[in-house]
Image (cartoon, rainbow, N blue to C red):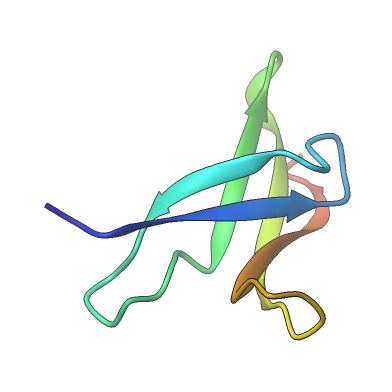
Length: 68
């Protein structure tokens, strides 16, 4: 079974939500997360993995913009 992590989303339409992602063999989450809203994948919001040096968490996904 793969390891997982819960990572908060910061900014954009999903600000404050948390996603559960699978970690790779090096213990790292995916570099991006596509948050799919009611309009589907074409209108997904793109979040980019960032180190979180200001809080006690290791990572956050920061909003970068819409997919379209």
